[in-house]
Amino acid sequence: MFVRRPYLGELEIAVMEHLWAVEDADAKALHRQLGTPRDISVNTIQSTAERLYKKGLLSREKVSHAYVYSSAVTRERLMGEMIDNVVDKLSGGSTEAMLSTFVDLAERVEVNTLDRLAELIAERRGKR
Amino acid sequence: MVGVVAGGGLALLYPLFRPGLLTRQPRQRANALLGWAVAPACLGLFFTTLLFVPSILNRLGIPAGHCHNHAERLPHICLTNPLISGSEISLWNLVAAFSLFLACFWAAQGAQLHKLARLKSALRCAKEKTGTNHSLIPWGTPAAITVGFWTPKIFVSKSLAQSLLPGQLQVILAHEQAHVRYRDPLLQSLAQALSALYLAQPRRRLLDDLALATEQACDEEAAQKIGDRLLVAETIVAVERLLHRSQRNLAPLVVGFVGNNSALRIEALLADGEYSEPSFPDWLLLSPPLAVTHLVMPGPLHYLSELIIRH
Image (cartoon, rainbow over all chains, first blue to last red; front, side, top):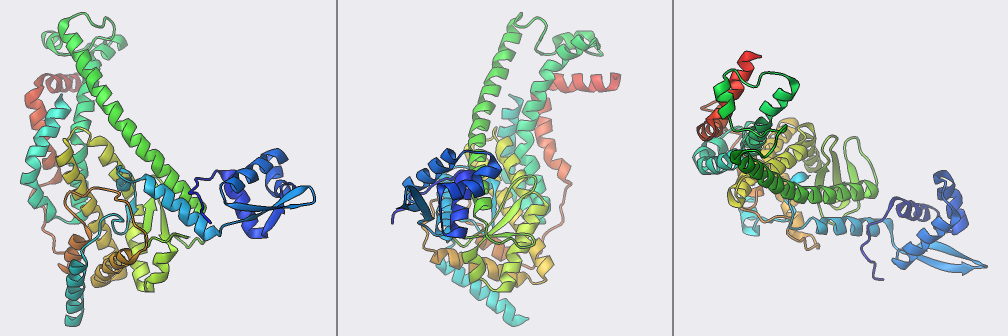
């Protein structure tokens, strides 16, 4: 299934995290766990779940009069997509200089150069 | 104007100092390059502030200068009776142009900071397991990222952690912890923000040299902590190979001017940390911009000296 690359809000993440933990829940159950501590209404929780459903992140099934929601993507996949999405938006700017990566994510050393350097390192190890 | 002149002067002088700088111990080099990068903007801001000093002192009831004749001839902006003389109007225009340029530049930097905040938020949200000093994130790209200014955090992708040997992972963590200890993301951001008065090409070269110095400094720290320089070099090669094999087609995050740093870092590690002792003290690096600005605007420095001596 195609998943849009989302940037999720705090409540959306909380709903997803809860559904990954309990597998499925309806709006009232979600509200008991997430809405009451935050002092927000069932309607807010319901619309958050609907939004996630429309984004393709939740699936739903009608049970009696209520929808029961469950996650449509794994946590690993969604989080990987989220990071990809943000990193893509850093492209072309100077943001990369404001964070530190062990090796530059954008610029690759030629394979031939890598082989030459690996040989030099092995040679140096051999001399020890 | 002083900042622009200093930026131009430093850009011209940098190729002369660069060979000597590149042989220096990396952390010293990074500090010197940071000073070099921010000097023009700092001088520009300093002299702009100085334009307002006589007026502010006057409002506070403090005599504006030791020598009245000199103080009157000093170009300054009067806040009490603005825009009286022609020279003041041109000073206001200069200040306005300078402020507009910096505002535009810093607005662009602010947009980048906003993206960075989103990245940090996404990484925090995605983290699965937290070790003692790093977090694991479910990301397909084999990467270790340190992000944040005051309290930088280290995030290691699971794909990287699972692909490397335990010793290599320790190297990466030691390297990133060095970034955290020296608050390198903050310093790099300052260099980005305050190098506004250089032309694009010298600025790119200066910032690339600073990035290389910072990475090499952290490599040296990691080598010292792990006790094996070759393992650090092997880890860089291993991560480069992983990124080559990575399925993800990364959009270019940066257009490099001096090329990739990894090869230079490995070569420096193989050179057994042979760096030359500085042949001149670091503060001497800042003497060219000071000399240039004194030649361009002797009045304000003379005036400031008088003020300090008097009070």
